[in-house]
Length: 305
Image (cartoon, rainbow, N blue to C red; front, side, top):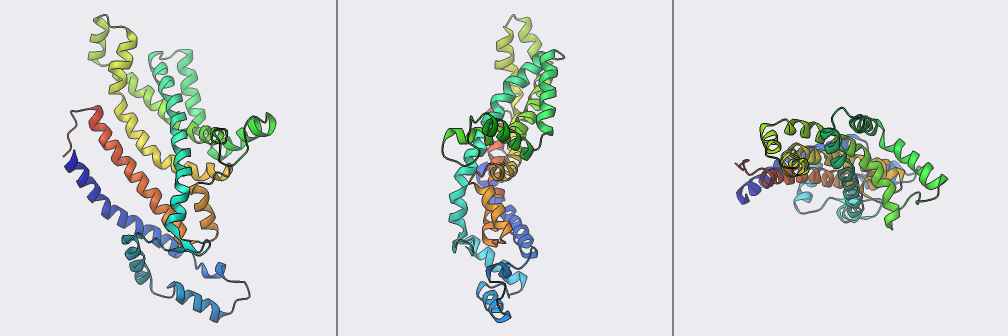
C-alpha cells in the first residue's frame, strides 16, 4: 500500500500543474483588477505604475511562470483587498467550510443509510415509495431555495434557530441540513439499488437458507458488500459538497471558503480566487485518493498495482 500511495501522490503533481494553469488562465481573462484598486478619477499614469508594480504589464507566460514559481515556494500571491499573503487568509476560512462539509455528510449518512436499506428490504412497499419519492424531491430542490425556506420557517416564523453566522451548534443545524439534503437523496438511491443487487446474490440466499436471521444477513453480509459503490459516490460527492457550500455559505452568511471566494470574485482579488480554487481542487483530489484506499480496506481482493 505504501508504494501505491507514493505513486498516487507523485501522479498528483502533473494534475495540480494543469489545475494551476486552468485557474490562472480563467482569472487572467476575467479582466484587469487595477481598475477596482484605484479611485475612478485615477490618471493613466497611476494605473500604469500600479500595473507595473504588480507585474500585470508582463506577457501571459511570464506572469504564469512567476505564479508557478511562487506556488512551488508556497506563495499564492498577495491579496490587494487584505494587503497580505493570500494563502493564510484562505487557510483561515478553510476550517469553517470543512466543519460545514463534515456536518452535511453526517446528515446525509444518517438519513441515507437506514432509508436506503429499509427501502431495499421493503421493495415496492409504502416505505419504499416514500423513500424513493423523497430522494427525487430532495435531489430536485436547489440549495439556495431550500436554505431560504428553512430560514423563513425555523428562524423567522418559529424563531427556533439563528438566521445566519457561525459560533454555536445551533448556527450549524440549518446550513448542514440544507447542504446534506441533496447528498442524502443521491446516496439513498444508490444504497437502495446496490442493496437490491447484493440481496439477490446466491450467498445471501444461502445465508438465509441456513437460518441466519435477516438482521445479520442484511447488516453483516449484504450491507458491507454494497458499500464499495457507495464510497465511490461519496468521494465524488466531495466536489458537490464544496460546490454546494459556496451557495449555502452565502445564504447563511457562513464565514467559510465559499463566501470568501465569492467576495474575491466580485472584487477581482485574483490571489484569493486562485488560492481558493487551488485548495478546493486539491481537497477533491485528496478525497478520491482516500476512496481508493477505502476500496482496499472493504474488499481485500482489490490489489494496489
